[in-house]
Length: 569
Image 1: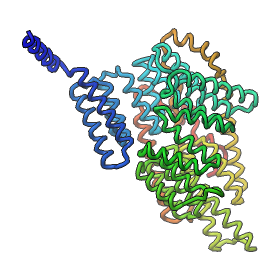
Image 2: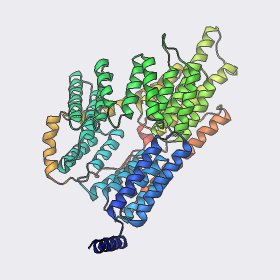
Image 3: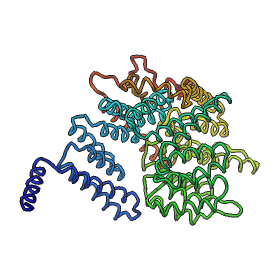
Image 4: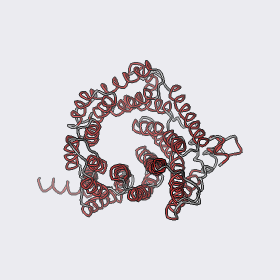
């Protein structure tokens, strides 16, 4: 009898192998692949990290060779490639996964949409999120990811609408909702920040706190770390230091506590407790050795100084180099290092080199816009310093004076850099205000007033959009709104225009007196940015579907919306 049972089991196993892979074997390989990917994320040694990523990739591909319709393997493989900054390969994997699954796997569509959103391909990301929801209307994570995209694009009304659908889908599927509560709380914070009425601002802040309370009560401490962290950050911004520290220390006990360590350490720096900040961030660096953001914050803590805890730029440089070694594409590290060299050491030449290296690590990202802005501010401030020294010396700058030539070079470079920043983020009020201030100090009052006027117009547009979207954010009111959404099938909301195209007509202000190396840098970056945008536009030209308005059908170009100053230039 035992022999017969053994023979029967062996026959069944061989039958299953012939028909396809055993599910337990597939799940085990996927678990191992994911674990090796996570281990690689935490590995400091580059060679070991590459080996772990390669092993993870091999396991995922092995699963796919046996089961091409395994959505978990497609998603896991794409994420492993993304973690190595192999975004083109990840995009191809996701496209192959959609084809292999017949377009029915909503998770693959969603991950592809998130990839395009991170790469700045907003229109394409919207199309992919729409496809994910068409495949599964109750996939709350797709609604949530789309909502975050719209929020970053400055459309809080659309973001709120999508978050409510995400919440309704999560409730229908009885899935965890803490991350959705946190997203609604942050949206309420945005409404409060852009509110012009004090009473309305306080109401939105109260609503945010109510959502955070729901977030921390909807699961155990390990799942609610992001809610504690975000809530602590809110209290820190409103001056409640004791409560903020208490909430952030609770978040440190969570499974996903990386951002909690970073937030608490950064705020200890702001509160002036540099020794405590260095201790926290040093411990965090040991816990998360492959985290570039924590490594950057640890380095920045040594570039700052107070009476009892002076700065140590030698130590800061060593830590910045270590942070760059962890992730050379982390632009916040390059930014913090360059600003430290400029403001602490006064080494403008070294800061300029660091700004350039940081920009080229991801030339058209939001962080690149920030790098361009800080670099422009540095060049403009050097212009102001020269003017002050000249004034204190009792002389006036005249044409042909070497001081005048150097000063003109700095301001001309600053203008070019401000223009590059606006090319990445055309509606960035902060860039416009900084440029206006620099022109005013340089004595160009007409240009300064034009830029200041444009900044006010953009700010009014943003506040108008926020006020139109300022529906009640209190959980009790939202609960009433999602009742019909939860009872009916979620619908796609892809009805409006996909995205307003970037301005190709926003021309760089030419300057003949820039040094050849810096002028070459500006020209190369502009060529890269323009060619990439044109390529993205070609990819989005789907037959029978209009992606954006043309000049002939009433569309408004960016240059037309910028006002008379830009028309003249």
